[in-house]
Length: 255
Picture 1 (cartoon, one colour):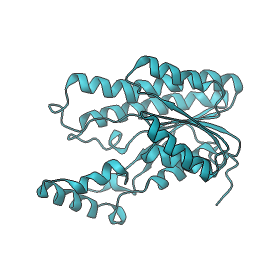
Picture 2 (cartoon, one colour):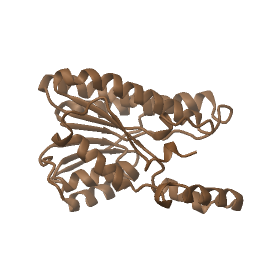
Picture 3 (spheres, rainbow, N blue to C red):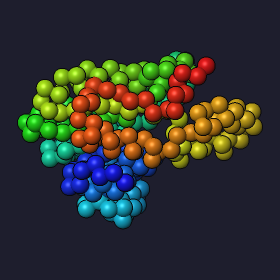
Picture 4 (cartoon, helix red, strand yellow):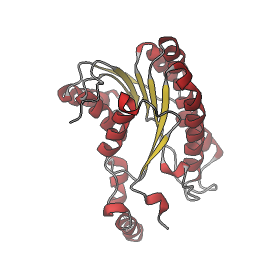
């Protein structure tokens, strides 16, 4: 494994008790980073903590927060004062057409994923600008570039975060702070594995066909996203900011 010289750095990772967020935390644990992990359930976080310590993290602190609750988001904002890295990976957005997702649910998802990310970035940047160092990586999603009419809320929230990352990352470098984004394609997590457990055989067959058309005939692996994040945080990517990397095997270009 290449030494990315991240050992001893401190990273705050939201949505890190499972899925892509956990894989990112695990990768940074292998690099010897001190970790601050955030999730919605303490039981899941404690299990993640044990795995991360075993993987090599010198320390792991756990924090329960649902960003739909302002006071819980505020508690996480207070943790940004001494971090070197911020990785925003929280926020589930409902799938569906414009008529499938209520205005209330749409606003809630936007507040959690978009405004939660923006608020964390703003607070972290305040501290990073003073120190003249730091890196932020936002985990976004490919539908922000390849718009999906069957998942309008996802496309809108992701497109907003892409624009935010590009705009802020273009100016943060004046303070020696980098801001980047990652657009994962369809990634194999606990959530996406569930598409093969559908009771409706028609939907099940449709999803299996979808998978067969993906690059390499499979979804991406969370570890493949985590490897890109570790690189983006390192000095190996020192001239990258305002960049949003697409990690989907090229699926966005397929008809």
